[in-house]
Length: 307
Image 1 (cartoon, helix red, strand yellow):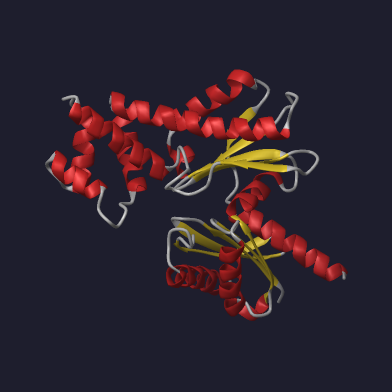
Image 2 (cartoon, helix red, strand yellow):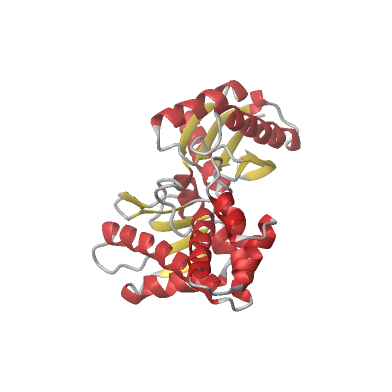
């Protein structure tokens, strides 16, 4: 039995999928494996759980996998890609392996080698595209401390900035109360301590809190989410301008939990992008990113068969 395996490894989750030809026969999701945010041991444990879980569901063994592709956040770094490759070699000893960035498999999942742009906003964020000549460009996605504008992490951090500024000005807000309730704290001093502790808080956990406050009409929450949609659109505009000098019809697919769950961010994103590129079509992603990894693994298997 010859199988292929694809992996989508992000900051918050790692999903492995096993396929026989074009049919997915097993999937499993484990915690994240991004080496920029977890240790080597944690990444290895997540990859092991995801791969073995998918194989178990497929009623298959590692020896059945002939080609595998892993799209992993942080794999743009050769060192990180090499570490992931070594981990997977131990898990899939017979497979021909590819380790690429998670942006590439997301693009492949949507466009299968054709031109287009993928804009991702989940725990992190990035815009990535390819034109008709095969040229690629990206904007953002350089990590939560210096980039990832409009991501879940950025939204939580920006919300805290706005909340603390509001407290300085003596303004009240439902968002302030919601965040304090979520963190089970009662004073501004406790809020400051929580924000600045040595182990960085998981600011992306605050995204649902901000979104709920926005749906209830809180002005601070609305400002934060509008800013997120604008920042994400700016990243997409950079990619569009680098790849298409003329105003060609282009599709942008939106992927990740932030886009999937927040209508305000999607609306702001579309309005900003179309303000100077009205011909651009913006839509939600219709594919799981691991489908792009499977597509690349399938192509590798076809090349292997021909040689």
